[in-house]
Length: 264
Image (cartoon, rainbow, N blue to C red; front, side, top):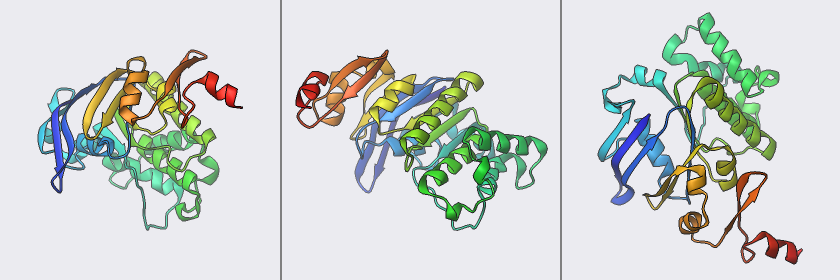
């Protein structure tokens, strides 16, 4: 479990996180939702020690994150940043190999190669494994970076907007892959995501943030509620049950399915 207790972060005199306390349960897929500037990426970065938080405590399985050596933490927890870019002229396979660095230090053993193959298969990248990442589309490149993160084979996987640049088909594939990792390998996965309905359909738990504060954290059914989401996004919306899933309906002036159908 990842425990966040009274965490604060200020950047250039602006409060980015305000007394955030939440537990991320093991073996579950947790999504973070909220408007731009809510503090989602900052919280993710604090958990992974990419930035220092100003106050409060963050622990993994009861152990403070600052007590981990960097390489040990890299074997425990992996992160995909929101923006990924490299000037290196490398192939997709070579990029995914980087995920094994905490173990291989650049000298891949058979176990490392097996993990790379697993990640390439999982993200359906075998047909472009030898292509330079500079020649890839934005969506292909994003999938390659997700594969690199998965190849790291950590218990905890944190992904900051992994659906960036992806079309609907590949977005669904990514979310189905993450669900499979939690179900089959008991991974604990945290995903920052903007699409409320992807969060609703694929999450076990949801953390909702706004203006650096925690609005609601709980199971997806506890968070996907009209009053919670209306407060979160400052807009009228409605929740409909469609094929057993709670789907958020939001239009400028049409807030229910019935009104939408009447307008067609």
